[in-house]
Image (spheres, rainbow, N blue to C red):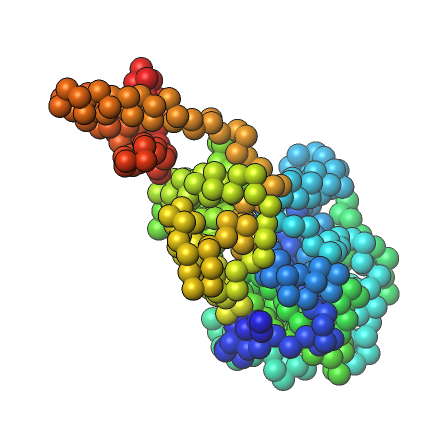
Length: 465
């Protein structure tokens, strides 16, 4: 099946046609490693992990090259080192490990390459030298700045003109700038800060140049997909395009640009001042399985704002409990083409989940379609495409096991006795108590089936059986 993706650059959905037929290259902006990743940081990871899984499914794992960087030299990292009295390397090493652990917990596969900015300083210096020689950058007072007006298409990605950007944005005014919009490619290192030798003195790269240099080194002058949150569209991605296209005029840089929308918490922007700011690790430590976090995220299309709510968390946990019970001991078959079809249409995870729900219900009632029986093996393989129901997803072992067998047996026994006595008060009382505890009660001629629902409270079952 063909894959269609919404291209921010052209404002329309486009067929993915790899630069190199049969092989796909994808770059996604990674974290600045100075602290734990908050849940908003996890959204692009999960979004592009699903795309990575889909690309591997279509092209083969060996034909997909996924690059996600670590920014391990930055003002925030330096400030954290000064505050804590720790070495920068200690901080970046620790927080990089935290990041990988937390992203693994939400089911993200590790990319093909995870370059660290500090390992590619030489490539950045070389690209900056090329920009200077081409007239697109200039050195001034130990800095090197990109000459924004030398790239005529600047602003095309975000849809703004340079003059509008100056009028509407806070730009750093400095005496060494030719133009307020010019941005830093290289900056001098202050006393005690990390620095590298360069033709312009000891210093360090600006933020934007690192992604351009590493994408060029690992994926080439032209590659297929560049992704990230829409908060990076300007200035970061706009600046990446400008410097990359000027450094390699014959190259395309990225053909398709994809941006995920931001995350809210209970309908409000996440912020420390509102008390609704929390990290992925906070949720994991509270006993929320990483798979539940992933499921909630995938319930909203990546180009729409996503609202994290406690209700969604509870519903996701209840659904995944059912699905894991349904697929227990099963090996994956083949992904269902009809159920997974929305993924090929701009990564529509929300529609795919709705089709998975229908598929699960059909399996439960042993429905037979014109194509044949609905296969639990194929259901599992389709869920795996979303990174759901995978064996490596962690967290379920930290939750109390929900075993409702003894309550089902007691309700069955009470019902048999009531059929003789015609007194159903005990049956009704137990059923009401189960429902109050958040249990879905299904009674039929075949028996009694109990399932925990969102908001299930095991403590309310004490003494009932």
